[in-house]
Length: 201
Ligand SMILES: Cc1cc2nc3c(=O)[nH]c(=O)nc-3n(C[C@H](O)[C@H](O)[C@H](O)COP(=O)(O)O)c2cc1C
Image 1 (tube, rainbow, N blue to C red):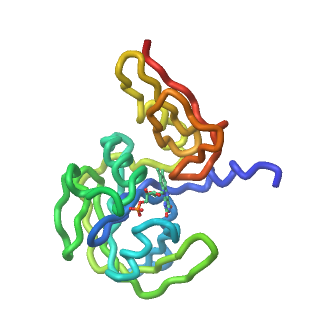
Image 2 (tube, rainbow, N blue to C red):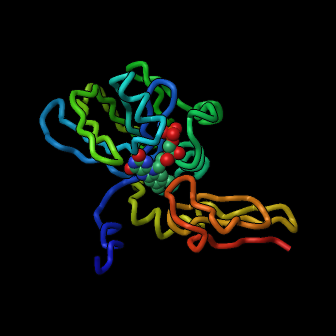
Image 3 (tube, protein in one colour):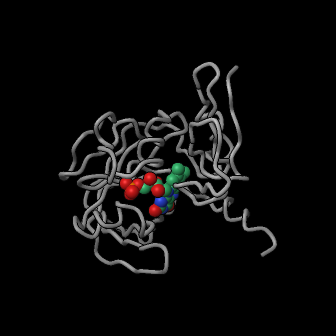
């Protein structure tokens, strides 16, 4: 492989995928067909709790996030699992078609799952759009923009003398003085070498 980073130039957005009981941040969303009830696909890692929830609920919503979205939304949905926390506790939502939509978004799409395809690591869910709305005309956040700005987005505010390690691949933040040698990012799986140290003295 000469340079896999070219995949970052595929134009994808950053979305909050939600369903009853949880959800997660995704970029792997695409419109498969057009018409009155188009088909939308979303690829969800099998290890994510959202994958299990989607298979149970057979329905999801995608909230389209803007460039000025509150980074707490990305942290809550993208760096945590709904196995451990209630992701909706601190995030403002509205309910549409019995699904929680992130209020701080450009708009949303609600889909009923009509099919899914499994591969080794991900399930590709295909949903038929049953409801959608536009809230505002803000600029959507692309995956490329996220990659370029994630350090600023997650500017670490550590207490004096404390240290944080930021994953250069996905933005996940580990708090602690030392990063163990065998440490792997719990979100994207990269090794210790990908972490940048931030400390306030
Ligand atoms: C910028 C960004 C993009 C992501 N894209 C995807 C994606 O397309 N598919 C996916 O399954 N997970 C993606 N993730 C990872 C999940 O959001 C993350 O693993 C989440 O903690 C899973 O939570 P859950 O266990 O509650 O489902 C992304 C995370 C970030 C920060």
